[in-house]
Amino acid sequence: MPLTVRDIIENNFFPGTELITGRESAGNIISWVNVQEILDSVDMVGSGELLITTGFDLADYTRYFNLIKRLKAKGVVGLMVQTGYYVDSIPVYILESARKYKFPVLELPASFSFSEVLKTLISEINRESVLGNQSYLDYNYFYPKIKKKLKESLSRGIGNESEIAILAISSVNAYNEVGPDITEAFENINSLVVFSCDTYICHFEKGAQMIFCIGVESLTKLKDLLAEIQVVLIRMSNKVGLNLFATADMLTDNNSPDIAMKHCMEALQTLHSVRAIRGTCLYDHMSFLKKLYSIYRTNTLYSKENKVLRLLLDKDRESDSDYIKTIRFYLEENGNVTRAAKRLFIHRHTLINRMDSIKDLTGFNFDDYYERLDLSMALILNDYFD
Image (cartoon, rainbow, N blue to C red; front, side, top):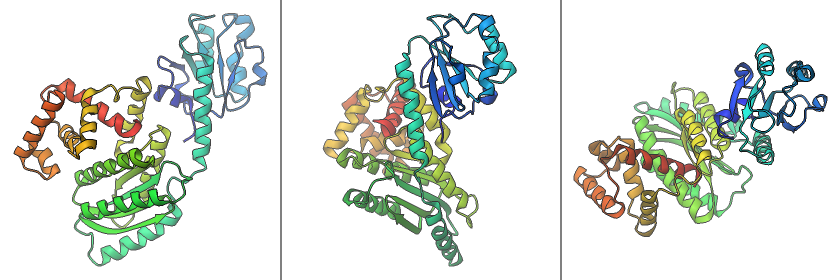
């Protein structure tokens, strides 16, 4: 997805930055960034550019009364003014003109250097340019095969009693060559999917991409499968540095996988756009993932500083204790021991004993809402970014 003016705000690239005017045009695509401390070369700003300035002498109405009109005419996508140095606030006449022309004007806090702003925005522009040339999932290759196999299976009565889902796996680096690491990861995921789904219909591979069509009992079952795949993704990431994405969506019409496949592609694109290093994403959770990225940008150490999470991760690495999976399902079930135990395929009392062991190890208070919330956030951030 190309970088837009709206993305600067929604992704919280520069905390405290506000979009003052032009929300109607916030979808303007930023092709490049132009910085002018003194606005003496406005005619040099090109179409598709975001103009950034300190606002020096911007209070001079006689000099800049038609600034917004000129920028709009040249196809400039927005104006970002840094306040706190030469102007304490953006002049009213600038804002009135911007509202008239529905032109985006952003206010940037003085705490950010232009070097930092340029580095971030140009990095985003370049990254999206590269990603735009990548195929998150080769739709033209996979779709006919999936459609044919699904039709054959349903005609034989296979999958008619299940909810049908599409599951897509793709390397974070779309240019990865297929080697032993990807082969091992795909074999592990394939075994896991075949074992865990209710009905296996088919799967296909091409390069560093793999897609499944499966039958599951319910959406909850699909979520459980994604949680299991997340464990594999983290293990491969830590073991050999191979980072993979996995996305999934349920079919609304069992006869057509078209929409679900496109949803999986969109979810893969979202994982790329929020700079996740690995992870799973159900299509319905994309908006939450974008908000999560905003939180991560304001505190990249959030999960690293959570002592409970660190202790559980270390324990699992040392002894295969499965504490992370246990705490994940418990938190996802809002503390309901019976439902969590059912998802873990263990007796309720076994789960209670395991929770006691976790409490002894970490001091975690299962009854404290804020401790549960804090650990939930740290756990999710660790899944995607650490």
